[in-house]
Length: 266
Ligand SMILES: Nc1ncnc2c1ncn2[C@@H]1O[C@H](COP(=O)(O)OP(=O)(O)OP(=O)(O)O)[C@@H](O)[C@H]1O
Image (tube, rainbow, N blue to C red; front, side, top):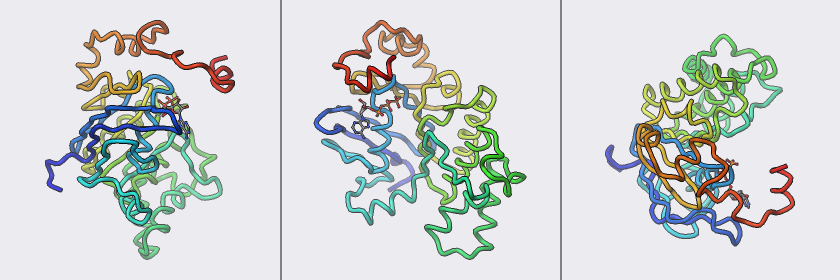
């Protein structure tokens, strides 16, 4: 691939969960170096889209290209591509009986045969990148929520992935910690030459650091543009989401409710 090729390209993508189509007609191109945020109401398919990017969920139709190649189906080839994708999931996923440094070292110990001294140096660099060198010997229970998220971020960066994926990176963080994490996402993206894709409900915190935003609703992309264009949009779907209006064209209640969704809504 050349430097001008997009890091992620989705064309005519359809994603199903069981017999149900969650997303369709998805076309998206994410150039190298960009921070893209995926917005959309609960249950609109944001995590499903991320699952397609990591190869966890196969396309029902259309194509998913990562780093200029169709995402492989064979597990060995998929494993290799996944090494280039750093993922920060909603929970931090830190192992409680390991120190901060040991948590960050884990991917390096698992995926490389690097000597201990080199791993220690790399871990220190990653902790430095997130401003947590001083916490190297602490255990996760001794950290604030914001610090734990930053450790998880350092661990996601351990293998120097060119593509970072964040699923709701601000969940459970207070506004100050959220601001720190968002600033870090942007700074790491630029200083390490990454490309970043975020899923978020936090429009106010996320918009200032992204280059491109898309919004998913009613099973497809209903908006794609810059943060300024999103905020200026008069599209009723976009306005309903941004203004948090329960009434509007987004079909929150379009499907018959199952027992689970009724409980969630209660
Ligand atoms: N593993 C799964 N098996 C079956 N259905 C699923 C699975 N994961 C998600 N779904 C369904 O797919 C739809 C989209 O879910 P998804 O989690 O992608 O939405 P989301 O936009 O990320 O939601 P939220 O913001 O609440 O996390 C939902 O109806 C959900 O119930």
